[in-house]
Image 1 (cartoon, helix red, strand yellow):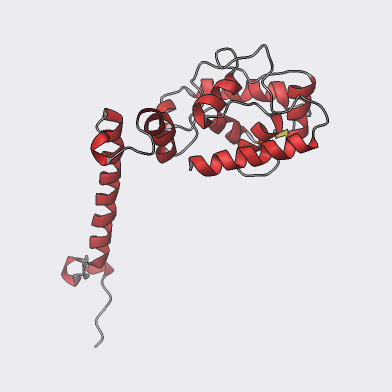
Image 2 (cartoon, rainbow, N blue to C red; image 1 turned 120 degrees about the vertical axis):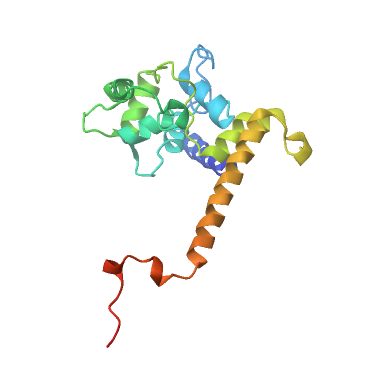
Length: 208
């Protein structure tokens, strides 16, 4: 959920800031903006965060907390697993992974370690490329709805009668469909088994 993701980022931000002995952590590079830098745009639009911190950014997108980015995590960070990218050609997906690993996987072992990320970002100033695929939607449906629509157009004080936008209607209609499916499944599980409906070959033989 949005709250937990923001807390994770802020904790990582604090940890790396404490480790820093200079002023480079927790600050935007002066020449970069959300219009020109994909990572800043991603943080702004997907997480509602303004500060870029290399260590915190890495931790935020180390989805399995393994200490390294796998190709799957890079694709997820760029939003390639989101339903909005369902029709994206395989070649484009492979391009994203290939180009990012070309930039940051120094030892070419198929994992971008945190030390490699810091070397490239902090020491060499290498930035994540913008592949023209949007800001990178990688939350679940609930998160994406809340951060991209509810927070933007409604807010915490919104009442049920205020949720009349097409995005609201589609979101809650999906919830209704999921609830109906769950109820049908539950009802089906509660129905007694009628032996006459079971094909003879699958019935247990009756005791003599």
